[in-house]
Amino acid sequence: MRDSVLFISPSAVEAATVSQMLGSIDIPCVHVETLKRAQQMFKTEGFGAILTEARLPDGTWADVVRLVGGAGGSPAVVVTDNLADARFWVNALERGAYDVLAKPFYCGEVQRILANALHEPPRLTRAMALAK
Image 1 (cartoon, one colour):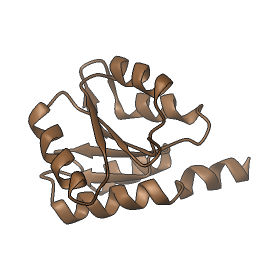
Image 2 (cartoon, rainbow, N blue to C red):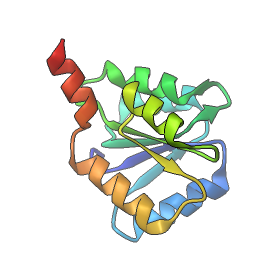
Image 3 (cartoon, helix red, strand yellow):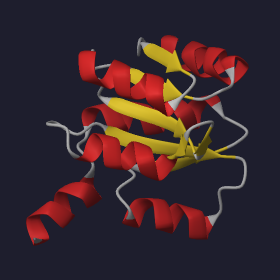
């Protein structure tokens, strides 16, 4: 499953949309609604990338970054939000996210960012580890 995306979102409608966008380029997408469920999935499955809402019913995107930070092969974390702006994007990158996807979703952008996240290790996280 290293070639798949885990989407953490309370919205089943958005999950279906993202799954359809990624499915059209043969990238499997698994949906969970909470951080707790994502932790369970993450322990048993290996995902190449994680797309997460900025705010979850039981946590935030920063909790997701911390969760995957200790895992071997750390998947790229892409954060999505209705209120994403330049300040949020910089904050997310500085704290270990791979990228930010603003809403509403645009098919080409979703496909490009997540395909790159699956096939290219997170640069900032790698650079920070090397700097230590």
